[in-house]
Image 1 (cartoon, rainbow, N blue to C red):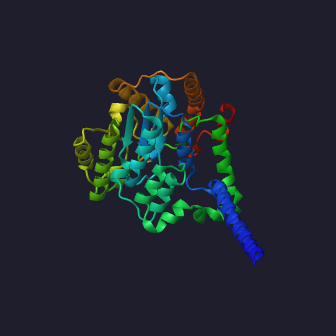
Image 2 (image 1 turned 180 degrees about the vertical axis):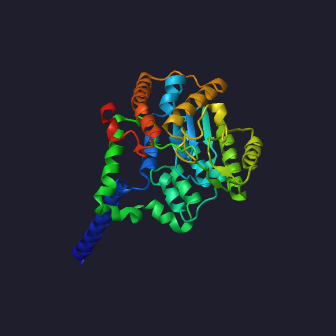
Image 3 (image 1 turned 90 degrees about the vertical axis):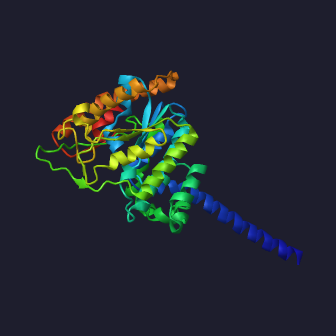
Length: 366
């Protein structure tokens, strides 16, 4: 009798061990099959490669930042380190999670917050995809778990904790995940993103371009998200500047920027509204834009020069960095100096190519 019980116990133990090994194995390999938006995957991955407490400025927001701002150029001209921690079409509910990560990892002197996500209502059909661009690409942490709990609809939360359910089909589609993983591993080998997340679509607008019109408003829901964000920033002791990037987009609500300024102002923060500051910055309304919402590589250089000076004059961003960090940033600045003329020429020629640090044209520069 005792021998039979021992045999059953051993069988049960083996079964439990097998299940644990299987779960652990799936947990270890499943991140390789995560593919959502490769641009955002690289931006998020690059942020987490930056040495802790090495960034003077962290910029939070949407895709307008990674097409319109170059951290290596800002370093080259003004000497401060920065990184655009951005997610395309970022929902307002995610801003607080990005702020937590930025402050906890970097303790930057300044957080710049692009307000795009607060003045665009969430698209319910794309909400899951937009949440995954951040959550599926960040390491496990208390912040990630709390963000899933508070920001993901209840019926979707299980698939965010165990995303193998979402991406299991990619196991059989090597072409969908292998090239992406190769580029991420190349970043790991370098130790950082050489372009600090810059992406450019080589387009420019025709002289007869008609800007898009969009109902940009600060809805009651997003206004509450904005107030919550400001309160969180205050509790964290974060120095925050809110920003509206230059846009050709026309809004049906001309008071929207004043509404945002009123909310953030009540918490002691400022809104730098540059939505139509083309002449102030020196931007051409057509040659410097790729579409209604995004600057191209030509506009990016102009905007970075203007904005870098603006920040340098108004904030104490000067800091001594370690030799490894300084060497990293000098290499990134040299890389951007080499690739920028190619991006700008192709934008001027309206080739419509999409270029980033892994484009074949820049292999010799890596």
